[in-house]
Image 1 (cartoon, rainbow, N blue to C red):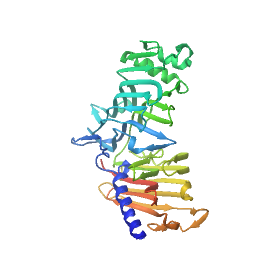
Image 2: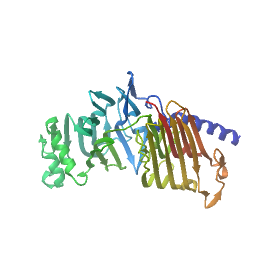
Image 3: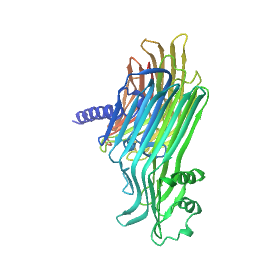
Image 4: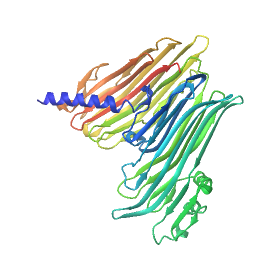
Length: 474
């Protein structure tokens, strides 16, 4: 009977994971972005006009982050343009409402859009997010905090190429803003940085300040000039997310995140990113575009349909890296609820190049984790890694080479067998199982999961070291 229950649970876990997590890593998705139950997703179909550039865009309304790990089910209105060489490609995504599991944080309708474009000799990609209404704080039960309301928050990022070279532009605006402080607050006693933020606004009451679009740039300039987040006593703090870009002789990237608000009132501490757009383009891309990169962990809890992952996910530039290996390090990351998972020493490496004369594109990606610890299961795994290499001759099938490595696995300090590639090892006392090297290979390349952990009683599935290596012609 126990074996039958475990077998059925395993089947349920696998089925749910294939649906829930396939959308989590866009590297492996060829169709439209994952759709949320409360959202709408539109891709505008147009005749593909291929260029010699590679374009990629990522735009979303709200993201909740805890210790470098995203809550994937709370990343809403997510419009993602996968690497393409085509202009005239539009991805739109809308959400009706977004509430990041905290009654003090309320975000209304959000719309995101990415578009690759050509205007005469100018080529580019633009990403825009608009959030209708943001309300942070207020009265929830016995708790009363200051209340910040922003309407019509818009973020835009633009990366482009002209005959003069590559360039980028970023911008923010809003329709209106208001901040209601606690009654009896003495404005003169507020932190100087907060007083500076309030200065462009109209004081319409003893503790209420409002402003319209005309003061938007002044407000964002104050946030930009602040060297640390501005404290709002009794609520948390607010900061400009980021506004930056770069352009050189071979590529341009533009990224803008309007606001980072940390709510410390109540019984939880949460950081919410609002209004984010990231786009990039580069060339030359004479053969195709790479859709390659990795993420250290994907984590799914079936009971609450919660998904976490994208531990500072890194991807190979669409056009490649001109044969140079790019390395990114994440010292620590964790997911603490409902089952704690601790990662130390995360490393991403990517490399890709294209050869016009030979009409060949080739490259590889690698994801590695020095230590994985799941304290409640007394499980420790060392040196988990996966690597996906790819090579394509124009018009031909992508040739893939996949490999994984595991250093050691211990439970309660006792070593257990390391599974061979494709193999499965049961955890002691029927607690779960560990499966190594799950591979999905197709015409365009491969994706590999270094290690999959299933914990039966917690109904949790954890994928470690997921790496994709794919090449597309357009």
